[in-house]
Length: 263
Length: 94
Picture 1 (cartoon, chains in turn blue, purple):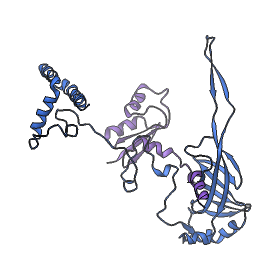
Picture 2 (cartoon, rainbow over the protein chains, first blue to last red):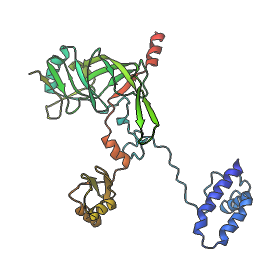
Picture 3 (cartoon, rainbow over the protein chains, first blue to last red):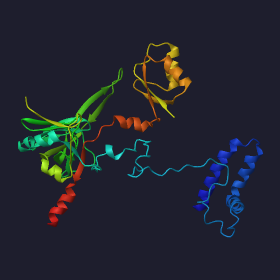
């Protein structure tokens, strides 16, 4: 096992070094040495590490390559962590920042609420039921409590019985009032809980695929599955709750959500 | 070092061979494709040759392919607050 791996690495080295060598005798000589790879390896080891001539066999696989081969870059798997988030550059399809993954958010700064929102919020809170325009993958869903939803896709990594929080909404409202975000509301202003009730499937569809001038027809079958869920709760937080959670009241500005009454 | 962010807005179908070749040299193959090139006179000249069908921005660094893709990816808009198994364990523990 060990000698085989050494052999393989040495052979790879030879393959790399062979085209670079000008004289044709050199690779042949090296190939002749291939049979005594272990010997060659140990002798090179000794020349490289004179301080440990007695135990040349132990760190063989861990020592750097002795021949003139390209350095093998071994990148560790990229894991976006919080401390290296600034220097982290997504390279492959697998590198998705946590902001774009369905994980619970963590907040650094407290929520900022304008004075006018705080003064109007009790009107909205007092008038139930509420609706929310929740956005899943940038598609809006108008939801109220007790609704059954069939998503147009199979939601990954959820099972029936799981409780989801919808945290991206463009509007929350009641019969007479609507709180609109610009373009989205802060997710700490409302709570929308949804329970996954199961998976539904459509009837099997069979599409006949034909090619020209051929009597053979192919049947393409498809049967998609969809996640179904029920809205447990749509709730707007009261001003007191917001203040308890550490909300900061600021002056009015343009980019903050406002509550509009029905015309 | 600043970069040009070049987007091909209109297709090169029906354009003269010279313009198509310039686009090929810039690495723009289809509409809405985005490439990054360092700011230099030669690149600026290439952009001038096809200025009618591309849009150009000057940016600080070249984004990777995945970063460009992530710009288009929307937020999922949900997260799992509590799994059904965890809730059942809580209820049975009481």
